[in-house]
Image 1 (tube, rainbow, N blue to C red):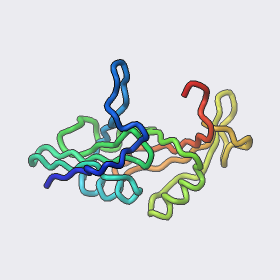
Image 2: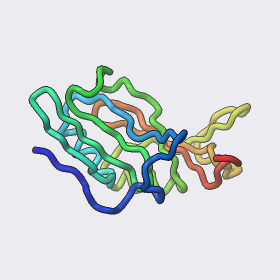
Image 3: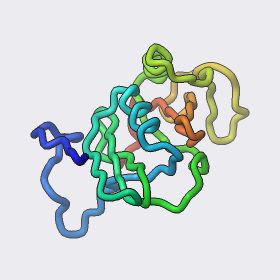
Length: 160
């Protein structure tokens, strides 16, 4: 079986190929022990399936893209040497971490409580008391234990 999403809907507003000198992070490979279980999990997050190429008994690549992201997640057989569950802190920027957390929980994902951390300050439970961008987090894992970090960013730092 092989399929791919060929709709005109792009993951980001810029759908043209990179220009000379640009480097765009396209895909992150995540190790897993069961391709179909991982596929079901990432689909349950509401992420768009971009591809499922089942080339042979030793090679299969599946790719999903989070809503609004220009970078996809790839997993499968024969694409990465890392052990399942060995990836930590795959950061996903979200506008409202509490709402995103609740959405994931409603989809059956176990998500940590909110916590805050800011350079030079002690980490603590709950959202950042000052509501600063880059300071409130929650975490979750895929079925193999690969770690994801939700980071609330309401306003980007200058130059970002």
